[in-house]
Structure formats: structure tokens, C-alpha cells
Image (cartoon, rainbow, N blue to C red; front, side, top):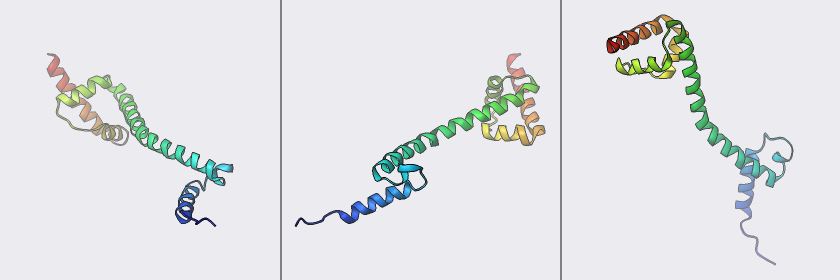
Length: 122
């Protein structure tokens, strides 16, 4: 009779995969081979989407800022350039929140940027 080896580590490994697959539908939560495939795919998707989430939020903030700048008749690119010239280190997330929650302060920032840009163009 052959000696049984690796049984405990194998069970633990399978149990870990099956626990991660516990919320999936159909065979993906009950059959080890299918569960393992789905867990590997899910982990790769979560890695990719963690990176993508940062891009998506940055795009959202830029759209919000651009939308808020329409009433001040300045383009987004000119505004960001003016921020750099005025030495205002405010990131896009803060600018976006400021445009939504505190329009008066946002207007002050825009006016400061316009002053700096007008002094440069003269």
C-alpha cells in the first residue's frame, strides 16, 4: 500500500480556493477546477480594476472641474496652466469638491488664475 502524502496541504489549498469562490453561481462555487479558474480570473480582474479606478476618478474630477469652469469662460487646460504659474498646489480632487461644495472659494481660485494669466499675456 502506498503512503499517502501531501493530503493535508492539498485539502487546505482546496479549502482556501473554495472559500474564495463561495459567492459564485453554479459550478464555479461547487467544482474545484471551475472554482480555481474563476478565482484566478477574479484576482486578476481586481488587480486591473484597482489601477483602473484611479484613472476613472481622475477623469471624473477633470470633467467636474471643466464643467464648473464653463461659467467663468476659461478652458480646463488654461486653468491648470494658470494654477502652475500662480504656484497654487491644489490637486484635482480638491478642486472638484470645491467646485461642487464651495463655489465661492472656487471662484476666488479661478479669479486668481485669471489674474496671473492676464499678467503673463500682457
